[in-house]
Length: 198
Image (cartoon, rainbow, N blue to C red; front, top):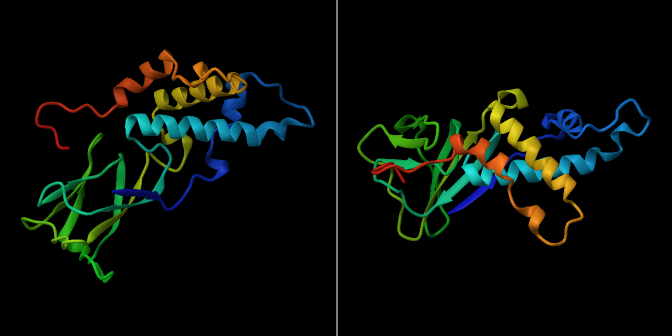
């Protein structure tokens, strides 16, 4: 399996001003923007760490996911949520010949934790031996930071502040995710119950 982000979050969509306010950095000075690049790096690190822990993408991005077999013959759970649209599905055989799957033969089932692609007929198209399928889809709560759930926004600011305040820590203790951040993430974690889809 290979998950690749085809688009990235523009700097202007990141909550840099909110992060400055969270850190209580002074404003109104001629060098107000001097730390923006550093603050951006901590925000991106915090967003990445949280997204990896909860299996959710916060700000909208386009993603390509390549697999060598379907999880189920008639459906395929997607690796992250929330998914807003399937852009395309293509099959590639061992020889490298690519075929685009008819968009009318499948659809997206939206789900808070485990969205999936499902076939309108009984099965998804066969992935040939030695071949692969690539699903290109859009994921994320929205393009604007305000679209992200409030507790996740707060968790990002808290974790980015933790990284910022421990940026000179070489012991490794500063790299641990604080309990307060973890408690904010718990409602958004993907919980598997009994026969939940894999």
